[in-house]
Image 1 (spheres, rainbow, N blue to C red):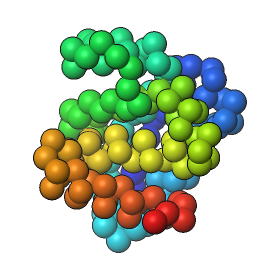
Image 2: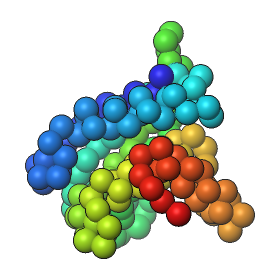
Image 3: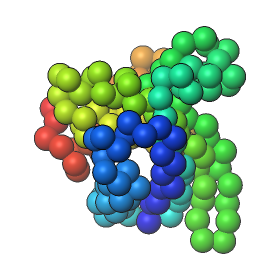
Length: 148
């Protein structure tokens, strides 16, 4: 089973998701039943934060002095019962802004899935890798939303 430890680092998240931990773990339970994720037994942490914290993290770890929607920090630590994949951080303001054109939950799901795939080893440095990652993101999103 796939599990997430959600850390609410900014109160604005509660305006849109009453209990982020329950929301995300319900999503992960659905994903855990999907054929390509059935045998996955791993965990990750998710920090729900704001632009200011994301800018600090982006500068500290990537030397980029700007905010971003999502950051992933893969580490892969094996313990007795599962594999800890690493950490993801997501900015509230960026998700909120994007959601004006769609909806908050769709945008949130897109971003945590993107971060999760980075933890699994996907990247988008080359166009071919970008396309592969995008296809995987869309296939996961279909479990939660009607997407093209």
